Amino acid sequence: MSKAIRIARHGGPEVLEWVDADVSAPGPGEVLLRQTAVGLNFIDTYQRSGLYPVPLPSGLGQEAAGVVAAVGADVADFRIGDRAAYAGGPPGAYAEQRVIPAARLVKLPRGVADEQAAAVMLKGLTAWYLLRKTFPVKRGDVLLVHAAAGGVGSVLVPWAAHLGATVIGTAGGPDKVRRARALGCAHAIDYRAEDFVAEVQRHTDGRGVDVVYDSVGADTFMKSLDCLRPLGMMVSYGNASGRPPALDPLVLSQKGSLFLTRPTLGHYAARREELLNGAKALFHVMRSGVVEAEVGQRYALKDAAIAHRDLENRKTVGATVLLP
Image 1 (cartoon, rainbow, N blue to C red):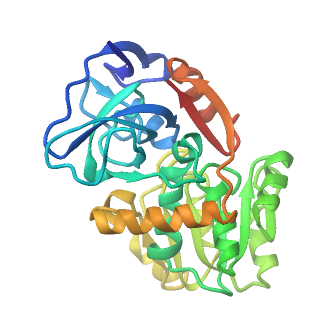
Image 2 (image 1 turned 45 degrees about the vertical axis):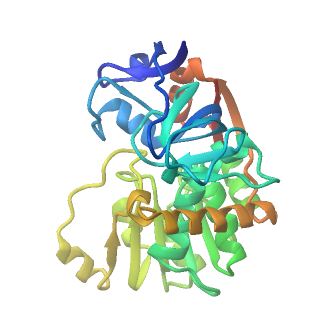
């Protein structure tokens, strides 16, 4: 019998239950993955709390890595024993084993360990579409990245710097500010002690930034608009502090004919070709050393509730993995 984390109701970390879980044989187009490492992400807490409601009862988790244990009919790309990883799709990664569509899996190349892949797949593919698709970053662009020392930030910041962008990052507290600088931020702002709008304007000589990548939400959203140059883009891709306030579109005009988008990986990697392109780009920057998939914390999968509390209380740094 396999084990998994399940929720029967929405709520705090206490609703996470470690239960027995039946795992069926893979059907046509499916793969049974014996999971060796599972990634932890803020979206997991949103689905657990009900901010992003999921049908109950439900599993949780968006990304994992492991070894193919069985393949169903019509699966040509994978064999038993292949190392593979995935990100996105219906929640359920918090499990020892999982049946998953082969079309959502990617093979892991040499030089990318299971823990690294589980730690970075969702965050890395998110960084990929943010930097290469949503706002195609080029040399000379100036970016503001909130939570620059966090999970996505730890991938996005060095990748953006590698592309030739100037990255201004925000982080909470001296330790995370130092980490943001180490990751590649040209300027790192402690949002707890400094006015990040004033600091951004100072660092850009009043011009503003070309794009804001904001995963924080309510606490930063409106002020982030004031950091943009005319015709700049606001990319809201997370709600760590709660949902942003409702916005009258006229405000975008008044602040400089700004662009606003709320993207998701599901749309950018809906086709397998795009998923493979994103994974290829991610593995390239990982293997070349541009992005270091550093695991900041490890928890036993059965202790997922503790990991959720630490994540929500901003006690984690970088990526976190849960180990089955």
